[in-house]
Image (cartoon, rainbow, N blue to C red; front, side, top):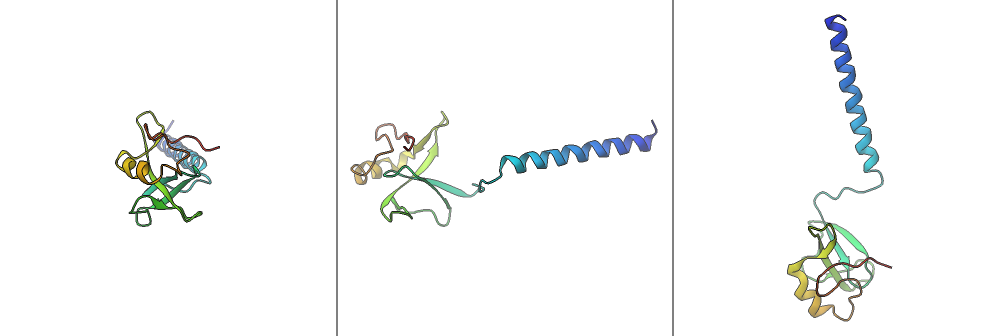
Length: 116
């Protein structure tokens, strides 16, 4: 095989790998909005999750649910176990202000229970 044929084969292989990688990532992310630069919140009353840009995220907790207009949104974090929790630093506000409305967050562990 000549040097030029070897170079053509290498370039062709690289192009195939690149096209395959682009196709793979495009397929993986189809239909899902990007979450970079966003913060996740949960409504403790309905169990519904919301994503906000950092600029639009509630700054005073609990945040206002855009659907119900009630102040029931709490920030979410992913635990080491991969499960979703209300952020620890928000726990006192949740326990104090949302005790009666809370149906989806364990007040002791802050684990977010799955919605119905």
